[in-house]
Length: 390
Image 1 (cartoon, rainbow, N blue to C red):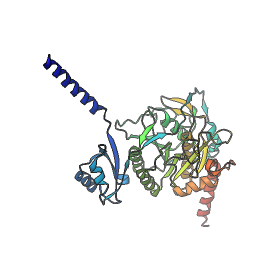
Image 2 (cartoon, rainbow, N blue to C red):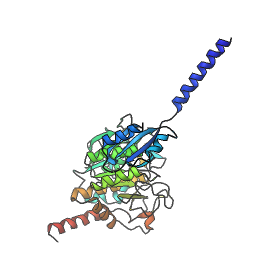
Image 3 (cartoon, rainbow, N blue to C red):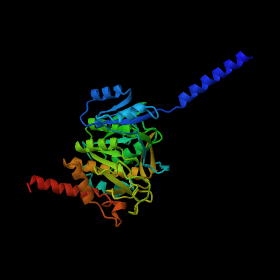
Image 4 (tube, one colour):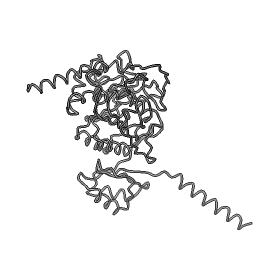
């Protein structure tokens, strides 16, 4: 009897230990090195401290490292003269309201948001030809009939390397930017831009700073001119800031959702960074959306309530959020860049200078509602003056 009990409890102890080990979630930290540190040198330093690298982040001179809770070696590493910082791999989330309505369309419809920003008024002049737009999101439906001809490349940074949109959010964002003018479905703000989709968010609309940085690095390698970031992070990440600065320095126009908190001083990162165009949302009546985040960092407003666009599995849906507002501005930026080669700072300046004042505090509306027609008129004036040597 005693040997049987001994074997039973031994088996139980092993089983519980295995379950405990299995249930133990791995923890990760981002280790940022001093500027100019090479990958080989970084590896050697981490190896010296016995720190395991999960992923290298060359864009920001950092590594994502696997660490045990209360790891003494990490504490020792933080004192190393070659280390700039160590921070958590913060979570990011798409900025969409939790409801969506399916719509069946006959023929083609120009969504109210595209009309509101007067995008169709400039399509005789430009539809965004030749401009590359990166979409860091949940992926894009690569076979959607209203998008497939504009999708030039797709990539995935999640561990599974999946590139397909299993959420729907990324496809919706892509449609607002670049749905085809093809007699079916909807039309995007810039219906001839080239889409570079990178899936950094999972089916639940979640990601991490490290995943986003890897996605931005891919966008930079693909020489995109505009990056749409319809997501937000509450934490001020040094890693994300480094990535944003790197792309801005390379001349990439960065557009981000302000956030859906609907409160004072609630603008999320990366929209909160000065290098990024922070987009708030408005409704059909030119009033700030009740959910739209408020703060001095808001740069501009775009339609973000009941926005009709493409959705996964060839569908179309109405969705709301500053996630829906941001791609209107990304499309507008692409239209400007297709007309004239200007800097990312000039794109932001022109969009703000030509925006329509809606009569609300700047913390709610920024410069006002984006106006593509006026922006294009402004850039044409700049181009004429340059040609005439004024």
